[in-house]
Image 1: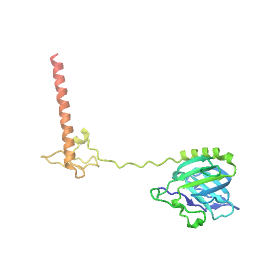
Image 2: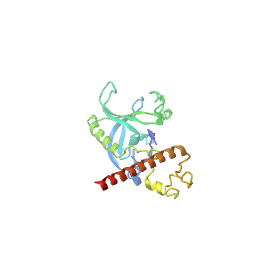
Image 3: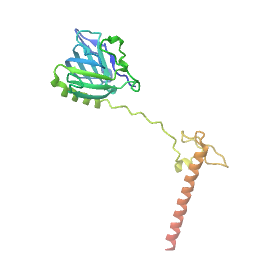
Image 4: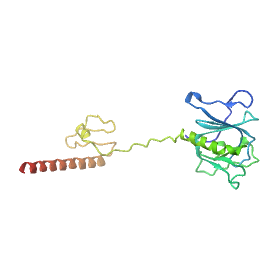
Length: 230
């Protein structure tokens, strides 16, 4: 499930504190980078804070306001890159794109004069991290890459379709109920079987398979007869 950007206020310790991590589920702190500004969407940069990169998420905490912080899971980051193009943004930064549940809709990420509380973080699709020391960008980028590899996109199991090819064992065990995915019945006039109400298709496929088997048996008998005459 895509979470997107969210507020993060779980801190521990004195002063600005540090983020509380989910250590019970294996989350580890990978990198701490002080003096980093965050740019949410098209808004103005926040006052510098501290960037925490963990094995599962990116967390930014304000150094002056303990109630202000942001976090995004690596699974929600569809892109991250180093940006040094002044036409794209005045300061060198880590540029990220964030997946949201509203990617297909037009998203208004707010103007500079709006309050943070008025911004729906779940619809923010871009975030920039601007370190005061631009020489750290390449190192931060490499850490982003390493952590992204630790969080591969989960593979959704495709819905298993109907398998209309029956094995010989399935045909021999017809009516025994050994295959829970199929329902067979014993009928002297029609011993083929059916599946989920699709009787015609199942019958046609099975009859073709049986006929193919008969042809193969006939060919084998013919070859044996030829071998006997030689």
